[in-house]
Amino acid sequence: MRSMSAAAARRTALAAQGFGRRGTRSSPPTRRSVLDVIARTQLLQLDSVSAVVRAHYAPVFSRIGPYDRALLDEAAWSHSARRPRRLVEYWAHEAALMPVEDWPLMRWRMEKYRYGRWAGMRRTLERNPRLGDDILAVVREQGACTASEVERHLELDRPRPKGSWWNLSDTKLVCEQLFAAGELAIDRRVGFTRYYDLTERVIAPDILARAVPEDEAVRELVRRASTALGIATEADLRDYYRLHRAQTVPAVADLVDAGELEPVSVDGWDAPAYLRSGAAVPRRMSAAALLCPFDPVIFFRPRARRVFDFHYRIEIYTPADQRVHGYYVFAFLLGDRLAGRVDLRAERANGRLVVPGAFAEPGHDPVQVARALAGSLREMADWLELDDVVIGDRGDLAAELAAQLLPSALSRSV
Image 1: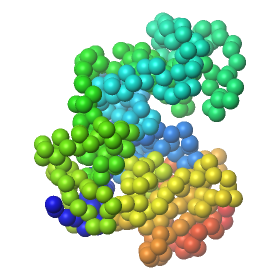
Image 2: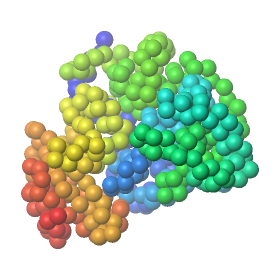
Image 3: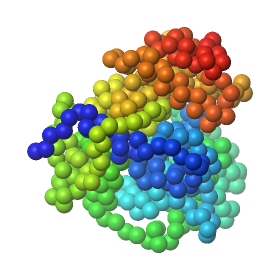
């Protein structure tokens, strides 16, 4: 079995995700630039938290730098004959944007979710056996609607279920269920609110007509995960599309037999690895990027620890006085290592990118990390149209980071 060093594996993983390719660009990124990122990552996770910027926008910025976010919006949530929809929402790695051509690969999952994605949905369907048909009739007649608009058309005035953490109405829950089952799709978002429409009005007929057996679909999803990851364990491949081990083990074996995955041994890894055929193994990696908590490089926490020796957990739901690093913490990629992390907040009303805490990872030179991080923070602030970068005093990197930013007349006090 071929062996690889941990450093070579890191560079392979980062190259597969599209890092080390920015170089010097004379013109702003285009729609093609944005879609090229997704061709590498395969998906962009969606999340409602907007402490800095919505999660699906951040990975594109990390890889190509400042770009017009409307390019991504247009690719996902608008359609015309000249510029057709290229991305669609579904439960890929959690809620995610994925290429619209991948819709048939999720049909087996839609069938699995037909009677409820989770127990609360199933109980709602049992309580309201006709509500799904009523919702579909409204959407068919009215066009793309929010759940609230559907509810108004149905003239419902029902109490929300007691004990529901999300406090969702039955109508919203059933809209979500119909989406999970593939009967509704997301036509667009406005202010991050979903507009549901009949799937046949969102997905092109030729794509919708494609039938892919579950084993073939899973094998293709594992292939795509391996393309996005470059080098991965079976658990890494399984997590990328939230598959089950019983699905991925035979799929990995098939891809090994076909020569598309090569079993390799990586120094220090606690499990066998698989190298994607044709994956680049750069001799060096030149990168400096802020990675949001839902970036594919770190969204599977065991992989982040295995590949980068980076222990990460999101602390949004941790009481403030118990947080170690902060509320919404970005990892900082420098070269082929995760060299630091920063708690970030965009104060749009005040025009400030606030950094309450900044931390260097063990073994990294704080001056070197702060110098590179200062440039990345300034670039992010400019991208988000924020005037100032404001550094707090939490973390062992805060003072050095503030010193690096002082020549640009940026504030240090929060």
